[in-house]
Amino acid sequence: PRHSRPPLAARALMGDLIHPSTLHKATLHKDRPTRRAVVANVFLVLYAVAATYVYRTAGEPYAIALAQQARLDALDNATAAEALQGAAAGADLGAEEPPPPRATPVRSGREEN
Image 1: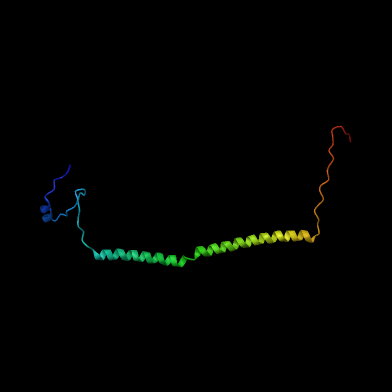
Image 2: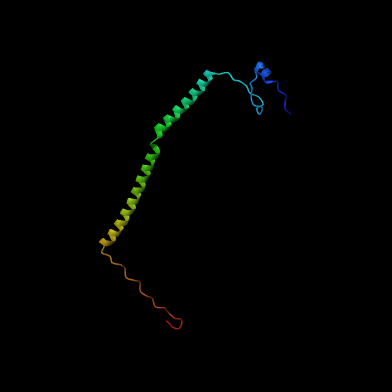
C-alpha cells in the first residue's frame, strides 16, 4: 500500500527532501571534512606501503628466473660434456664395434647327445 504524501510545498516546508516516488526515503548528511581527510590519509598510507613493497621486490622474480635458467644451462652443458667424454673415451681405446654374436645352432628333438 502506498502512503499518501503531503503536497510538494508542504514537504519543502517540513524539511523533507523531494525525491522520486520510487525511493522510500532520502536523507541529507552533514559534510564531514575531517572524516573525509582521515579516510583519504588511511588510503594514502596503505598505497605508500604497497608501493614501497613493490619497489623493493620488483627485481626478485626476474633474478630467480635468471638463476634457474643458469642452473638449467649448466645442467645441460654438464650432460653434453659427459656424453662427449664418453664418446671420446671409446675412441681413445681404439675399440671397434664388437663383432656380432655367433649364431647358436638350433637343436632339433631328433638329435642325441
